[in-house]
Image (cartoon, rainbow, N blue to C red; front, side, top):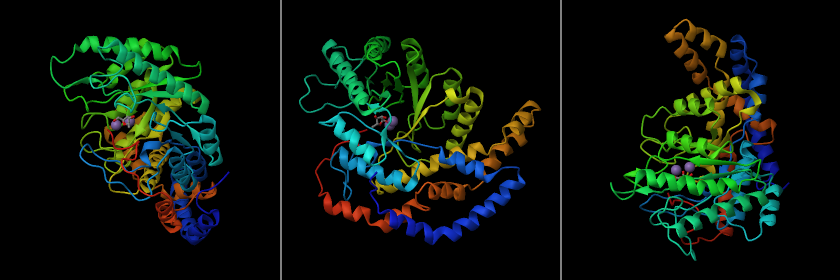
Length: 431
Ligand code: LRH
Ligand code: MN
Ligand code: MN
């Protein structure tokens, strides 16, 4: 397996931080032991955590208004994989990549699969894209894709999704995520019920092309680019469609795709209860689909989501295994640094949720001791588990401090020299 940053440099970085880490780890271990918690168990648990990196996240994103290219941006899917390799090498928490087609369409799928495995990477869900016209395409998605009035447009969108499944199969992926921006900008523009009927009709054809061990994940989003009525706007619509399609259809929750203040953890609980929680796109937001780094705005919400996931895991056992993916895009930070930070923040929420004393919580709920129930969650959330995360990384060969190690490696300078800027690099900042 190739490493993209010199392993000796990572070892040197870890050696410098070793005594501080040991002291922090022992102090935390002592504190947790007084609560009856074994730090070693938590560290092993942290090592089981994995979240996929979105291929489109390693390029510099943009907004609907502007795009400011970053230094050393990857120019193709192989370079994107290299960046993903660095993220996993230093965090040891991102062993898979989620590809987006046609942005990442390889000319040779086997070559791509081999490049990934040389970096120790595999592939999570593949994403289709019918929210944007592609060069050489016959029909336009201006008025929708899977819900379009035109039979020809729908057929093209269905064929693209089936093509994504075929590509995904050859890459070892096992799920397809479908997000469509279809909807209306004005009242009266489309028949609201008719659009959903056409969506289901199209999705049935895509569903029929799924291998037995595959899942199709329906991603809802409140608005944008449709500003009046988005066809798959909410988890209720997503859930109803997943139910109508069958057991291989599930729902994907992108944290940025809800109205401000929506109780996302409750959506997670509902979907888990009814066996339809397929996966996540983790990110953070203040206003809308902001695609900011996980945990940067509302880390307590992220913790509460993981608290529901811990509850579902306890109830449903090993069968409960939603996909964890990041979905973010940046204009102002180095995407590798941002993705590493996000992966660590999601892992932090996972470990903090494992610290919740579930038996005590259930007892306080039973006796209606509201204050103590809330405090039980807060105690876990307030615990700084950074030393556990760092120890889990170091033991797995990652970096004690991924961002510091990355900066010391000079990776960005090296790729900036090797990857001269390319105008309008694809795969980021479109939505
Ligand atoms: C839509 C979305 C969806 C797309 C990605 C680029 O806003 O979250 O997941 O595939 O952004
Ligand atoms: Mn998303
Ligand atoms: Mn989004």
